[in-house]
Amino acid sequence: MTAAAPVLSDRHRPAFDAFMANRREPDKLSRLRREAFERFEALGWPTRQQEAWRFTDLSALQSLALQRAADAPVEAAALPTLDTAIHRLVFINGRFAPGLSKLTELPERTVIASLGQVLAADPQAVQNQLDQLPGLAQHPFAALNGAFWEDGAFIYLLPGAVLDHPIHIIFHATGGDTAVYPRLLVMLDDGARANIVVEYRGQGRYLQAPVVELSVDDGAVLEYHQLQEEAPQAFHLGGIKLQQGRDSQTQLHLMSFGGQLARTDLEVLLDGEHASCMLNGLTVGRDNQAGNFYVRVDHAHPHGSSQQLFKSVLDDKARSVFDGMIHVRPHAQKTDARQNSRNLLLSKQALAQSNPRLEILADDVKCGHGSSTG
Image 1: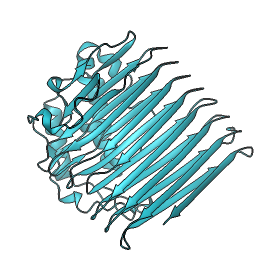
Image 2: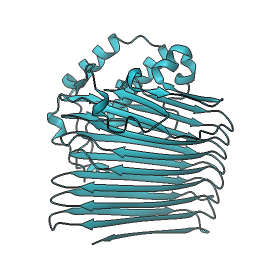
Image 3: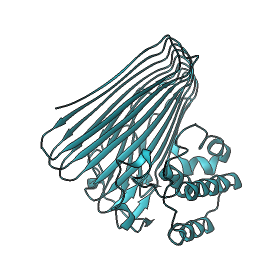
């Protein structure tokens, strides 16, 4: 494997030092930030010589200044879905916008807030949970997020708590050759149930590099919808970590419509017997858009199930990539895992690349994968 390109220290290190000089936060969070930045420096800037990045062309992103986004007013009219939810959190350039947010009728044993609000009220609640889930350790943009995030959404449901209405989260960027690092931390205790809708939007030229952490404990149920509808000149390089306990159920629906380059890395650990997940993805591209999904599902216990279906519809010179891996550990017997990629090309110049894979170390399983393009 070819090593990543060295990080240009004159570009990133001074920006990080200046960022840290203005932070006022607990020592543990500062340490986590420094560890994340050191991990980014060690990983380096991804290149197409690396197996994990050979279908992701970052050359256009390298010309972006990636400067910190300033505070900028955004009118409600710029957010077309603002009136659709009872529970809503809005973030502009990675910072909480209370005037555009709405939280009403929260049930007992439920916390929905910005990470900044929770840090001010109970720092331990955030410090002890951020970056605790496995996954994305080799993702340089997740490391950048760990170093530079400013705020994000915090959702915590105590045992048995049920939300009857979806939680709507909007991350909006205002452009200007900037980099924004949204954060979402979701924790569902035993038997809790939630439905979450996340949108990524913006205007102009920018990078959004979000990290989403989903912890779903025993018997909990999560339905998660993600809509990526970035501006046409934008870049979206995000990561999702999902860990599930025994008898838990999740459905993730990931839609990628915007941006000139969008990539989502999803890493799932089924960490309990009878855990099940359904993963659906859709890329719609035109012009020169590129939309990539990289998915890893790790079956660590018996009787788990996972179903993956990723589709793309491409026109003009658009490109899509689906790279999926199902890993079944030796003792994860009775696993049922399926993986499918289906692509529709509307132009002779469009290109869909699929690489579904299985790594099975148990002998009593039902696993399969397939790919079709037409």
